[in-house]
Amino acid sequence: MDILPNAPCAHCKFISPHNGENKWGRISIPYNRVDQYPNFPALEVSARKGCAFCGLLRHALQDKYSDEKIAEAESDFHPEIRAKWPTSGWNGLVTVDRAVFSTEEDWTERDRSQATDQSLGGVHTLSLGVWPYPPRRNVSSPESNLTWVWFAVYADSDVGPADNSQHPRLIVTSKESGEYVALSHCWGSLIAFDSGQHARTLKINLKDMLGGIPLNMLPQNFQDAVLIVRKLQLRFLWIDALCIIQDDPADWAREAARMNDVYGSAYLTIAATSAISSTDGFLKRSQETTISIPYYKDVRADPAGLLFLAYMRTGGDQGSWFSNIETARWNTRGWTFQERFLSKRVLHFTERKLFWECRATDASEGNEPPRDPRYRTSWLKHEGQDESGLSLEQTAGASESHFDAWYSIVSRYSARDLSRETDVLPALSGLAHAFRGAHDMGKCTDNNDYLAGIWRDDLLRGLLWNSHDSSRASRYSQYIAPTWSWASIKGQVHFPSGGLGIKSTPTFVNASFEPKADDHLGAIVAAKLTLLAKVRRLCEVVEKAYSSWYPWHLRFEGRHIANGAFDVNSEGGRNTVWAMECMLQKHWDYRDHPTMLLLHRSGTTPDTYERVGVARMEEQWLGFFNDCEPREIALV
Figure 1 (cartoon, helix red, strand yellow):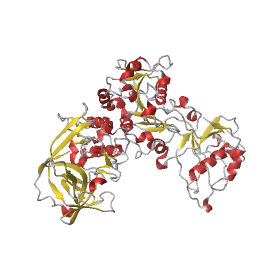
Figure 2 (cartoon, helix red, strand yellow; figure 1 turned 60 degrees about the horizontal axis):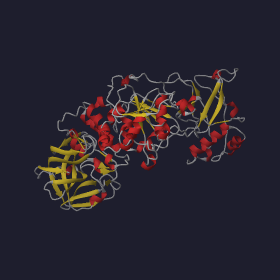
Figure 3 (cartoon, helix red, strand yellow; figure 1 turned 90 degrees about the vertical axis):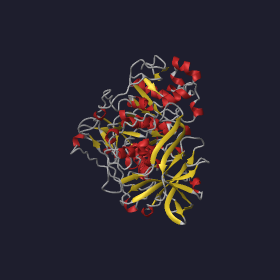
Figure 4 (tube, rainbow, N blue to C red; figure 1 turned 180 degrees about the vertical axis):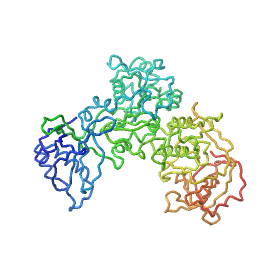
């Protein structure tokens, strides 16, 4: 911690709180000054003379308001520092509010930062003391009824004893019982990642990995994770790059299918949130300048200790959770999506501080209040839900609600980045396994309950996804999924809400697909969906400009009948498309809106089509398909 020497000026010498002046939980400190925006010359002069608080105040003001226009008549700032002794909370430490700099007399209190030497110290003294060890297997009441899943570990890393007397080693089967920690991280560039021979487990180095791995031969993220696990007095650490033989397709496929077990059963998941590659490490701190001020328990007594102040940036209304975690590169990667949400407990290491997430609550090293439940990230929630959130158990009897939760999962996941496009379905299979188990949807003996990212029990709504931005969306360079699956395009997708009522028209006949490996919820080689449906040819497609969701006019015999959205813009230039009646959806206006899939003929096989988009008709065209007889068609 870089603590500047502080020679307080005449203004700042009063910033030494006395508990004896505590009235109604407040200690008022006489501090008031006026300076000129935007350079604050008086604060600058004072800081040069040795007043560290003036320097900190000037830095905070310039950082906070550098891009904001402040009216000259209201340019006085009224900083106020508050020392608090919380009557409740999870650690009972004294906290100090971040200084508030406002042009208004009526200002709103923001988030808080811890005011102890421990909270701003080196990560090795801090990381394991912020949250006392929760009682194992009984962390909090919301988790007490969870079933702990113990499984045969195909490959784990034994980090060795805490005294560093043994090198970490890879163990192929874990007969030793013990809790383990999982690591969630960004790999980064594979070239940089493979700079050392122990960065990944391969067939050629498997024997060496089993014998022992010198700690300094591991990428920095792995070294840091080993240190944390040893500090936790645990022995086992699961890291994907080490615990999966990376050039063995069978081992990779088998382990990729087990992510629900791996992260769901881990005692703790360490998230290397601040690192953008495995070589970065995540224990380094980007520490703001810190100053110390004396703290008195009594007016006439000697100082009882020091309070430490540091300016802490915030990221909008969601505070530093958003700026430190949600916008991190780690949170943009495809695999980390399910790693985060399958885990019972996640400890985030960010550039500035630690964050804790579990299924009961969240907390931060800065002693911030828990986030508003609306902003608490959980894959069990779906867009537009109430603040209480959805749990898998709560939605098990409400099919529309729990499928809404799945569509939210897919929508958020589809915005993530993957280094290998073939990972689109495997990187979500862990969540699919968890979802299937929670809703008892694995009863199909033919493994056809999950069709390339879509659940058969809500098939038609699952087919009606649309591109968030078709101008940027594209098809993959190789086969990833059938055209009717959201996984067939590169880009974020959205799904229709349940609305106020849905009436489906096509009938499911059968589905056939060929998985790439044993995991039917992972990668596939081919898939076909057979439906009994009404299909009608449209003759003219004309682009329009005033709707971002359905930017194409669809015409039949010269009349405009619907607005459509193509999955990829380049597929919208054909004059002839086919429309398949899909469902009638009742919306807020209580009117039935026919929705349909847009199709192109696939090759020369009769009644075989590829999906190219989705369209919505107005109520007056309800009878458009009345003259059509349902026929069996295949979607590929």
